Image (cartoon, rainbow, N blue to C red; front, top):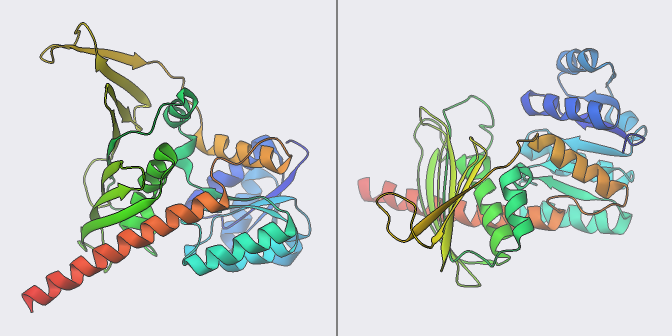
Length: 319
């Protein structure tokens, strides 16, 4: 992968991290940002070029990350794919499903890799669970709570945070959403800042997801339930614990055995980018394909619509 020529389009807070990882695992040719001073700063830090013209950048590379605001994803990716450049597009994939479908059609026609940055797939605990080839969990609970930050305010909490867990639910169950029920609150912005969703899937599994970007302390947890066991995932602590029926080793819970899985931490973003570049080199698949990114977007849009209906009904009841 070291021989691949790469670049990053959009080097704000997250895009800068993308550029740092590319500099480690590939030939980072440069960066592009509508804020020229920001591009110059990141380029100087990493010893690469700050491009002032997107077309010129695309002519000089094999693969890029697109880390612009979501509204710009479609236009940038479309131009890149038309030039035969492989794309890793940050989540959410696009602003609309029509935009996602357009990119998927073009990528297929051009024969380029189109990946989506659903980074939680790259977490070591998720990779471990996938490798175990366990059956689909029957019930999933997830909490993704974060303090308020003046970033990513072009999207609501569903597209900002909950979409991660929606994507993991689809990945772990290999099923499609059948029914969505959701509520939400616009606490500090004009969009939903807190939301809770109840998702029923085509295989009978159920997921209960909570997301907030207005809490004091970050929480990123998931619990997965099977008939004979359940798993507790703490993404912040990089910890996976199984609880299963047995002789009983957990105080206060008779007949339950606790099994803590010792996992070595690793850089999730670098893993995601490395998998993308490996796919570009013909070695495997990206961690989240364009089609999987579209599925996560579709689920998030369905939750958003349900929350919008709830907020409208709530407003009517108080008018």
